[in-house]
Image (cartoon, rainbow, N blue to C red; front, side, top):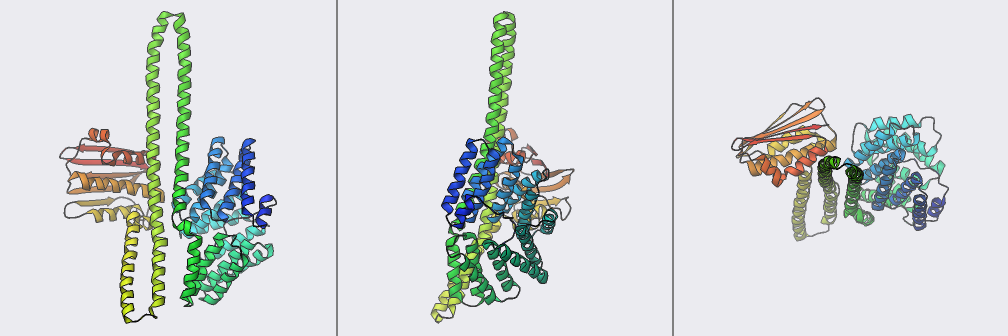
Length: 569
């Protein structure tokens, strides 16, 4: 199933010619040479535009690693040259790529950055593309905001004569009404989209429409034969498999159709073809590369700012030395005065450099921890959405062969199924351990309450109290960070405090979230812990500080410990 969230334009340059001849290597090479020319002539906006075009081409051939790398390289230049509009386009594209890789937290972060810039620009095309990406993200995550972004697309595209845009709008409406089970309205938009695709004679658009039509036949009309026919026609449209993204989705849908028709052998055949195409994606290579690319971009950005400030401080120091030498040569007495002034200035400058270095360390620690959180979320998603699906598929194929086995083999098959179920349960449990399902579905306060209840036992009781409104929700990335901070602090209580009771409270005051954790344990000397970076305090301080928050720790030996955290949301 494909969402119509892009607005393709007619291309007349060499890239389009090469692609028509199925020569992707020459198309990529042409864009690389064009990028070098733009950099050489310092045409940085043109360089960003070419990067977006290269990224689209890499994505078409399912090379998302190079697509992301290209975008982040362009983003560094856009940041340096303060190319605001280019930044908005690049953030939107990075967000869309992350959404297609199931990195929904990252997708939301970059799309919101683009949205913030876009609100200050009068760029109709950018507004349409951004709202299409946001509609896709909120649709696949089943958010109620999907309809809002759909209406925003219509607002910015009204009176447009662009058939590609009209096709995209009808596709969006089909997916929205289909998700709401309003099948009659959904089918009308599907038919309109298909008619426009035929009119503009765009092979990819036709393939998308036929894919949606096949999906409609199978899910709404339960006519798997008709659905299979549509998907097989799509494969005929791409005999050289020149669009792996569409081919992979089609293989998966055909496998499902054959499964429902009872032809398990064919279902397995097309399922294997699907996994062959997306083998690199399933292995996690793109996930790892995505994290490495983004982390390197963040660290380079922080180090660049640090180097600029250090150079500025060193320049000031050099100027002050020159002035000091001149005045010292003229007035001996003034030389002594300036000597003491110089020593004081050096001390201040060293303190400034030390402060900048500390901030850099905090940001690097925080960036690393954020990367770990995002990796944990992604691994949980892969376990839940992919590994569980594969295990279920294995169970399906075992069922397909059961009828051909004798009694003794059936008994062995039952043992195999028990082992398969145990593996499936362990994968599910591990997924829940990595990311709390309550945190994603119900929000922070429900997840913290569940955390306290799960950690309570005969040795220690965690008492949770929330003064928040019952259904209040914060930004998902914010909630995940707070959850891991509290989880780490509760682990410290369990491991080190010897407490029998621990109180966890949370409330909202003005625009801040206040968290208090208080135990009746043995306590500790706060200064000693700060010196040794014990109990993970440095990492927790780095998390809180990077969120523009404040953490205070008060502990008395044999009287317990109180931790207060205040964070802006």
